[in-house]
Amino acid sequence: MKTPIGFVGYKYDSSFISFSKINITPPTRKIRIKENEAVNLTCSIIAPEHYKRFINGSASASDTIRIGIYKAGKWQRDIFTGIVLKEAVEQKNFSITINPALSPGKYFLRFAINHQTYPSTHNSEKIELVVD
Image (tube, rainbow, N blue to C red; front, top):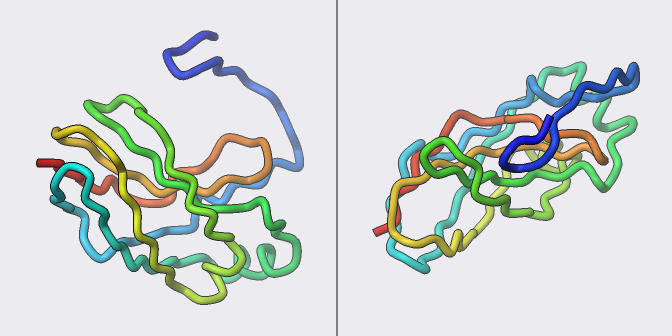
């Protein structure tokens, strides 16, 4: 099926790994910045123990955290952080400075985890972002 951001389909894969139970929490769920201003986020990451064991035993360097940017419920683009999931889970938190480079308006951000070529999972609540 064709959608505005690409094709959506169904594919059974018995080895699919989903990180949906991992929760990434920023210090606040509302952020207000000026146009072209950077924002620093120190986030905590919580994972069930069986996820931690799996990640420590088999997670590859390609499992990383990204930030999706949405406006009016529509995906705009992703910010690829380069933060490796295994390291973030071990440390239990991480800091990142991003400059979303957005025009003024209301947006929301959502953290997600990439796993190889599979669709990423949403791993945070919506984080409101207002750009003045």
